[in-house]
Length: 261
Ligand SMILES: *[C@@H]1O[C@H](CO)[C@@H](O)[C@H](O)[C@H]1NC(C)=O
Ligand SMILES: *[C@@H]1O[C@H](CO)[C@@H](O)[C@H](O)[C@H]1NC(C)=O
Ligand SMILES: *[C@@H]1O[C@H](CO)[C@@H](O)[C@H](O)[C@H]1NC(C)=O
Image: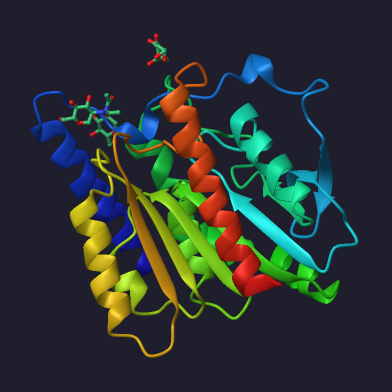
């Protein structure tokens, strides 16, 4: 029962966080500034009628034969930095979709995260997203998934199907080495030195599991001097954080270019 596994992982994660002196979940750090949403900065638009009933931020050429689905963290698709990333990915020639996998019920700090995650399992979401991927495929698009935190677990789930060609997980949460045994497509994992959710030693376990797979291309990198969330919830006034996030995006794009084009 995969969803039970997720809850277990999260429980372990919560327990581990609670056990440390500075107990907090890095998954919840630096929430997006929703007030900055929309306006001229956004190249794309929000659509309400994607197959499967999804609302999404879409950007880039709809006629592209390559689609990138970006799976958000717990804060959802109403995140200015995530949309900036989507626009940059679109500039590389892709059609980019950032679905609202939470049907508007994004996590916010007034909610109890363990309660919230129970009703928003990334494993279940990956199954529920089937119609969306089927529709993109029907349009003749080959698909990549870029997942962040919650979306990393989502991406690992989709990577176990034949629906996508390539996946990139940026600072994923609740992903396990077991997941790596079932991944069917080239996988890139971008971790952070200071990530307490998916620490470097867990990334090494992913690599060890992938090394034992035959013919699944993989790449992993640990970015120094940053923590969980560094790729999509970075501090925009900290030049080092901005540079590192840009570097992570470049790695993701290179990975997609290599296996999608
Ligand atoms: C959050 O929910 C869990 C599970 O229902 C509960 O055990 C915990 O006490 C709650 N935490 C807070 C801060 O309310
Ligand atoms: C990373 O961890 C080191 C050592 O614990 C700490 O000094 C540094 O401030 C942390 N940096 C970030 C970005 O979390
Ligand atoms: C963001 O970075 C700036 C410049 O380094 C720093 O002054 C500020 O405290 C940081 N903000 C947060 C929320 O960490």
